[in-house]
Length: 231
Image (cartoon, rainbow, N blue to C red; front, side, top):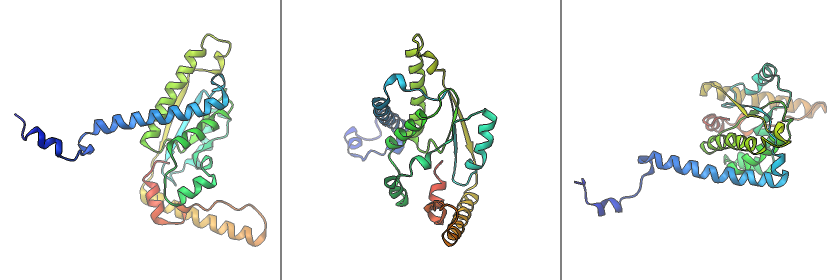
């Protein structure tokens, strides 16, 4: 027997936190739509036969101030990677993206995926590449899985054609750097102070280049929020 009449159950507000499997299915479905559209947009520009990605991709993640930039040269050397690293923060440094980030808003996953795919296609496919700062959301994690599947799909498609060497078996390596929130925020604020001091000297002397002053490196509250995101 039901603990309460069925009609009563139907009138209750639906709390999705009670059904995590439904939320998970929804996230995966949304990620598929996002990835498929982003991939199609890029493929329309390059052509399917030119969707040639690096055979090895290292996905480097960690909160701001965890040392991603510091460790990148050592990782590249150890893996013999000659392609320049791809920094997601640099890819998303357009005026439109900066305005969103300065407001504490997230850039759409579709835009992130498209920018990333363009950057990967600009690499030499014969060697690997390191991507700094991806994925950063649940949808992006699912998109990463779909990207791996799509690379295998391309490999199968061109396996028995003259283009087969351009579509090798993909290798994804995941590297996550961990750091305590307090240390992360401290490093971000320290970086902000150093950048400000550098820029003051450049403006006074007229020598050197102005460095970007990140909002996250100059506001403790924003730093704490971004530390909660894997960057």
